[in-house]
Length: 223
Image (spheres, rainbow, N blue to C red):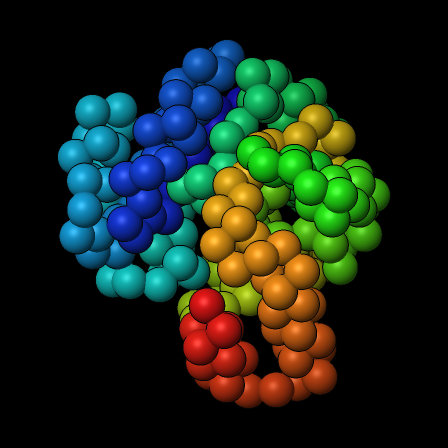
């Protein structure tokens, strides 16, 4: 099974190289695309030293859909620029995707800085509750399922949450309990409790049917 990795970027020079190194050390056949939304730093230069760069309009969902159109693999893996894969990530994906009933899934999550609350968040991602799964856990999906879903909805926020919810209607959604390592930079910058509250308010607003543009404005202002 060929795995196609899509990494959307926007000014990610501080973390992208570590992520790309975690991709190139994987086993088996794969391809990787960095889809840049107009970075003003060294992101594109760094990416080009490792893989193919695609230029796109800005917006994570837009960028991921753009990257998916270039993919030739049978499995798509959407990876955030600050998320590092474990060494056996591709091996675990291929093993679990041998089951034809599986539509896709994600990994559990750990952070590169640990506090009691972050450990608690990581613990919750070890359960296959879709309420707790987001794009920073690395979402993988069969090519044909992604196409049936018509990709990500090109919304300004919560595109990963929406996609994961719809993915569950296409088949079995699995959790690989080997964690990817995500940057804790937002929690460090804003404070763990404050950032956690912001995240939960965004999810609650989404479930309550608040206009997605209003949610995005709130999230941007809170940042």
